[in-house]
Length: 125
Image (tube, rainbow, N blue to C red; front, side, top):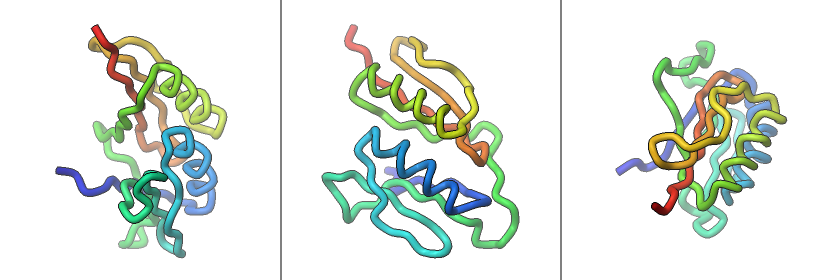
């Protein structure tokens, strides 16, 4: 079972601005902030942080993992589309526009630090 997900950033303030808007679409809200990281939780479970964006603890430059992807399960194709459009408008880079893949509805983009982000919705067959 996954406890939470964390991605690195080279500019925490910019990353907070990006994720505050983006994650609002999927009902995640920033609940903790300090000089090193920001944490986001479901609006229904504010004590359970699910996603962090952080400056690397070792003080080295943050880099993305080749082959690493953070995927958010959402409730509808419309949310996938809104998530993708918002991510791109906020400075994300396209990695795959919304569409059906493997029987479900997916979108992919890179955040402002190059982390690969996905949203997908299950499609009833």
